[in-house]
Each structure stands twice: as structure tokens, then as C-alpha cells.
Length: 211
Ligand code: 5GP
Image (cartoon, protein in one colour):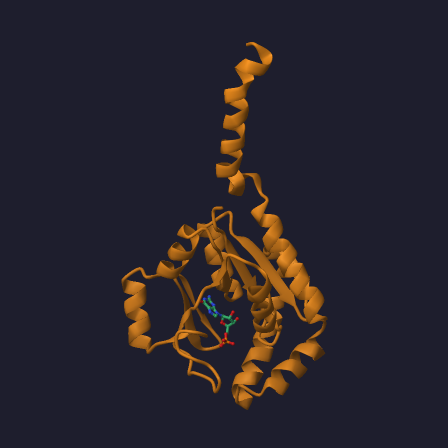
């Protein structure tokens, strides 16, 4: 199988992290793109697992060396997707999930037309605000900024091919799984297998039809 990019965006607190963890458990042959960021590491995060935490200077070097598929400034920090990791996963025939913001999603879609894009919507603003407050990973100013930015982010939902409403983790996980598996059935993604099957028809044609 040829791998594909699965872009997943949502406002902060939309619950995409939880859904992605669930999807990675149940869908085979799929990787997760570990981004570079200049944001501070949160308690419970690990370097190389959640992000590669780098300084501004290191991030600029990555840009200069064309090591990033895309990058954007989000909530006052820089985030970027590793081109090397994407290439390795696709070449191994795996899909790869890019958990990136709406600006990054637009950049990737411009470069890679076949990428699948999914927007995760929380069931309401109140639920989003409650989730962000409850997880308590941001200070008051950062939380406020993320809530303010959510208005602009949700307004860009129509740029995405698919929308999943995250009102129930099990159902929303199932929705994501369905989208990822359905994309694998696209004709272009099965071209190798189809070619083999059609060759078997071609070689048997003379015998059967006498042509
Ligand atoms: P957080 O700080 O909550 O981990 O992430 C903040 C925002 O940055 C989220 O919307 C997340 O999807 C986005 N983000 C994470 N990695 C990347 C990346 O590599 N590129 C872009 N454009 N956005 C990213």
C-alpha cells in the first residue's frame, strides 16, 4: 500500500489528542508525526514523543535547512512538521497523522493534494472552554489566548474534507477510523495490487477467449 498523510486539526481543547491516541491503538500501519516546537515542555510530556522541543535558533536552522514540510506560529510559539519523518513513514507504506493547526493544514494541502484533512469540532464553545480549563496545562493568559484563537480556527472548518464532532470519544474515534480506512480503498492507493490482478486477466485472456 502507498501511505498517505492524514491531517487532523481542531481548536485547542477540541480533544484531538485523545482521539488520535485511540486511533493509533486500533488502526494498523499508521504513524504519528512528532513535530518540532519552540513551546515549553508541559508536565507529563516527553521530548521525542510529544514533540521535539527546540530553541528559536534551532527552529530557524530547521527552516533554513528545508527540514520542515510546513511550519506556523500558533498561540505565540513555532511548530513545524518534520519532512524526514513523513518521508520515512510514507516509504514504509504507512499512513501518518499530522496533528497541526489550520494554517499548517492549508500549507500541506497546497503541497500534497491527496492528503486527507479532518477537522475535529467540539460539541459547543462551552464544552471546549470547560475541557481547556479542566486540563489545566496552560497559565491564565495562555488559556485566554487559546480560547480567543478558537473563534478564528473553527471558522475555517470548511477548508477541510471531513468534520468529526467530538461529543463522544468512542463514536468520534470510530468516525476517524472509518475515514482513514476508506481512504485506503481509493483506486490510486491500490494501484499496485490492481495491476497484479489485471495482469492475471491479461495472461489468461488468450486461453479463455481464443483471441
Ligand atoms: P499545543 O501547544 O497545544 O501542543 O499545540 C498548539 C497548536 O499547534 C495545536 O493546534 C496543534 O495542532 C498545533 N501544532 C502542533 N504541531 C504542529 C506543526 O507541526 N505544525 C503546525 N502548523 N501546527 C502544529
